[in-house]
Image (cartoon, rainbow, N blue to C red; front, top):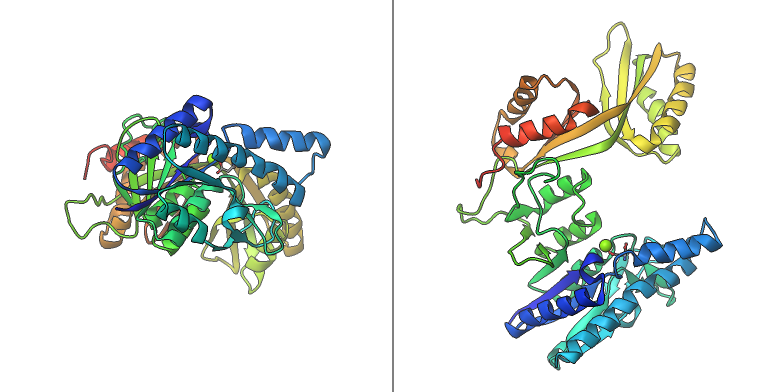
Length: 409
Ligand code: ASP
Ligand code: MG
């Protein structure tokens, strides 16, 4: 008999019919002899609706009272799901985050979980109860209600699974797993049976938004196997785990997936003197403006001057450009330029570690399509290129085809 933590997102509990269907699904796992803890989000659209209400009173609203408001969304769902389970003859109890006692820090609207008391839950499970917990919320040490940031129910699920030492944390959502790339761009994209945390983090941070990044980090840290599955269809979903099985029949491709990010912008400072402190003088004001920098590139210098290029989120482009123009004057740089019509495409895979020549294969595939590469960066398990935005679809498709991601490895 295993202990499973299952998390159902907003669309999965978006109506009474959907909540009844979730009850049936949970019961099917319970009937197989599993102890069940279920974490739910607010009904779809509810969190946004609550935020909108708050904004009608104060457009800038945040902090403590917003958390009191937002947590009501999840409280509705836990009660309804527990009722649906009870109606079917299965004892169930619902708890808010504070009742479980999920203790967080006091950073309202983006709190972090510090500890979880699980005695109540364990006791209920021993009594044969299905336990239903509100996602996305906790209390700080002074009993103030807190929330974990948008999408935070994933984190609640993983944290509970870690605290209860569950066999698996299963995240039910409206997609049936993690794909080799976005199926809207590449219809032949294939669902992965298994992927490592490292790869998933690269994919997620690059814009494949299946899971909250923080939840994946948490699962990795506490070694909680995570599984993403559809709440609408049957299937195995995608298992996210520390390692591919030693068993070589488990798929381990060279490349697991292709991620991309449309929201990129590039800024360049040409002809800046190549002396200590220059990089700091360029990027200091950018980070002071709370702008996150992604890729950074400095040329080999010629005649004592160099070129400095970096990328930021497209929303930050104008602010970063203004700041860079001021810096350019100070540093007597030759020229400032920027381009906010760029995208980043990355191939991701732990298989890269043990194989040479993947970068050149990637560049060859792009060259064959006549796609010019503007910037390149690499990590141990990822190669990213920046290209003109008009090449996004073409580039992703060509790489998917070129690395044969549609076939099982
Ligand atoms: N209801 C919250 C949100 O929409 C938390 C969640 O769904 O994970 O962000
Ligand atoms: Mg959600």
